[in-house]
Length: 134
Image 1 (cartoon, rainbow, N blue to C red):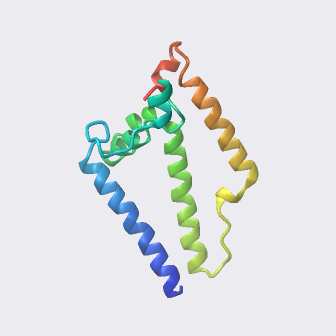
Image 2: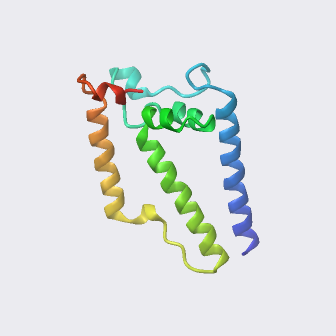
């Protein structure tokens, strides 16, 4: 592993730890320094990302089901990101070329389509879809 790769991996891990520690100690629903969703503020509707920071806050406290309720999409993307990061570390250790999951055009198009469908469904006023509102 080169010094540049070790620095990159270490930097990413430190940033993730800092974010997790911040979210552990500060509830996004109670602290104003977390950004508010501009789409929700302008329209009153939830975007696909609404509830993400609160979901990650719940995850740092071990409340996986509540995190999934607040935003299943971000939980799925987090899982993909962790998987991709693990694949990157493995490829660096084995000196193999790395191809990110997010470079797969079909996967990205599928994710965008799912996010758009989720954005519509989570704003429907019918039960049980109201449970998808953050």
